[in-house]
Structures are given as structure tokens and as C-alpha cells.
View 1 (tube, helix red, strand yellow):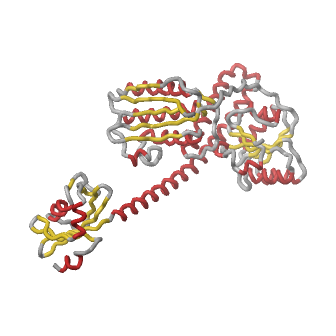
View 2: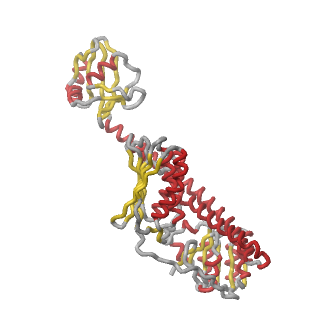
View 3: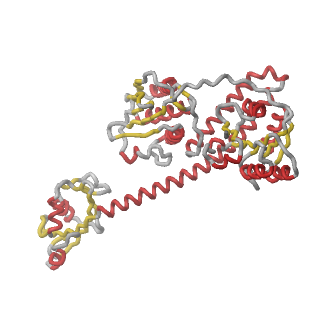
Length: 479
């Protein structure tokens, strides 16, 4: 046939002729591909489970009912595209090796998915950051209002209620911070020693009740472990999220296995569910909140990823179909146990001139009230230009507390102008974005430090007394 005469020596196109359901002529390229051995299967579609012992078997079978479009088949990592054409002598199979094209397309698809993931995470980060800032602003007003009520001697009978409300506000602030972990926006790194054994055991006790209701057991092997760096509240949330996911994946009468070990400066915790397991590509996406792999625990798993990376640890997943999924956590061991002395209420130095710069009237009023209760001489500015104008008129202050996000002029721009006009003036940023401002942020060079909203009154008193806030979460200074 003229077709075989033209393509018989082709090294790129495999050509075969099927007559009466059997293989007739075939060029050398087809023979080499056929002789390589190994079963073929459809690359995708409803027939993907069908196997063909050889390329010859594939061609003869498919030639009986040729489709209108080319079809793709796979053997190991090799992919071919086959087109069937009816001719007078039978059916011609034209087979091209498209492995390189498929790999290139897969690479482009991964790059598109990565780009889409980054865009989604960026959008979520912007949203979470804005929500966290606004919630911290509200919590700051509530916290300081509670502080003014606690100072009112006529409300002594309500002190227990006010103390409880203050604790609730502090808990709410920690919950808000998880939004920033979800969006991978937080930059602070707690370095307090935490008893991970106690936190993990507590999380398992909390999870065991619901697990038993679902007919799922928890088998734990957790020996005493060294202290690790972090926050007990955050680690409890991490363990809770991972145990929730394991319970969702484990069928009734199944078992969740929790193990912990120490070695090489790390504490390793593994949580293995009794579920059907995941494909490698799904295990790699389990911490992506948009992938759908994490199920109801998707947001919790994403927050866990953010927390572990921020603590300097790591979290990963391994799985195989039929073997369940194991979530691995590695925590850096705390080098030494740092016991902070009990907080003391430090009396503030009275009579200091303090300038508050904030565009939010509620924040401005309540912070002014709190500072005046501490014996300070307080002035306020509702905008950055108003604050700078005071310095340009020659006014000077012992301390400036400035919001970051303001219209017309940001807090960083205000700090830059104050540094130019009165370089000795200590400026502290007071913001709901404090967790997102890392220690290496170059803007920190413009200020003495950053205070977090909601503001801790004891740290504020320490700042008014010594020029530095008390140690702990919610404040960081440059030295």
C-alpha cells in the first residue's frame, strides 16, 4: 500500500493495518512499540480500567468500533495517541507517542493550579487580614472599657464578672489570630516552652468523646516528651483539627493511632486514621483549604499548617490507598525552660505628655480615658496630618501611640515625619495587624516597637513606667 511505502521507515509514527479482526501489516516503528511489552490502558474516561496485553491487542480490539476522534492510551509512563481510519483494505491505526506533550501539559496544569492557589490564598489573606484588624479594633475598645469599669470602686461587686469578661476578650483575640494563620499572614513566633505531652493528651481526651460516639477508638502511645516552643492554646487547636480529620476519615469500628517520639532536637507526633487513604497528589494538597481534600476539617488543617510553619516546625502527610493517612508534626525542642516571673502591676509615671493618633473615635476616646486614669496628660489627633501639624508647631510629647491603618497618612508615614521633626520622641505603633509585622520588617526602624490590639493594660502601664512594655504576647520592641 502507498501509505506503508511512505511511512514504513518512519521513526516517529507507528502504522498498522487491521483486517478481519487481526493485525496485518505494521511498520518497524509499530513493531518496536509492540515488542516493548506491558499492558496498555485508556488514559482516562469510563474505560480506564480496561487492560490490553499488547499494542497489537489494543489496535485489533479498538479497530472493531473506531471512534470519530483520536484516543489516548498509557503504558507505565508512556502515552500514545491513536487514530483509526477506515480504508478499503481494512482499518489503519496511526499511533503517535505523545508522552512529552502529556508531561508538558501536566506541568502547565500544575503551574496553573499553583498560580490559582496563590491567587486564592492572597485573596483570602487580604480578607482575613482586614477582618482580623476590624475584630481586634472592636476587642480593643471592649477590653479597655472593661478596664475602666474594673477601676471603678463602686462596681466592686461586679469584679468577678468583669474579670471573666476580660478573659473572654483575651480568648477572642487568640481566636482572631487564627484567621491570620489560615491566610499564612502571621509573622510572630512564640518561643515559650510548652508541655506538648499534656497538650496532646488533653486534645485526645476532648476528641475521644465524639470519637466513641462515632464508634471510633483512639490508640495512643505518648511517653513524656521534652518541652517545645509554642503556645498551648495554638497547639491544642492544631491537635484538635488533626484528630477531627482523622475521625472523619475513620469508619465505624476503626482506630486512630497517635504516636509521639523525641530525637535529634525534635519532637515528632504522628496521627494515623483508619480510612481508605489518599492518592499521592491528594495527600500533597491536604493542607490547601480550597482543594476539598480535607473535608470538614479543611480550614483547621490549613490553620495547623500556618501555625507549625510559624513555630519553626513542620507538618506533612503521607498516605496510600487502603493504608490510611498519617499526619506528621515536627516540633523544635525548647532549649531551656524560661519561667517568667508573675506579673506585677507597675505604677505608671504620672504627668507624662502622651499623644494618641487614631482615626477611630471609639478607640481614641477609651484609650484617652484609660491613660488619664493612669495620671497622664493626653492629647489626641484624628489623623496623621493633624499629628504631624502638632510637631510642626513645636509641640513635643514623651510618648506617641499611633494606629497603623489610617486614611490620608499611614502610621508609618506619621512615624517617619515625627522622626524627622523630633527624633528623640518614642513612637509605638498600636495596631490590630501586629501579628503580621515581622521582626525583620524594615518599617520597624521608624518606631520604638509595636503593640497589639486588644491592648494589655499591664503592658501599657509598664511602658508608661519604664519605656518598655512587660514581656509577653502582644508587644515587641526594638533594642
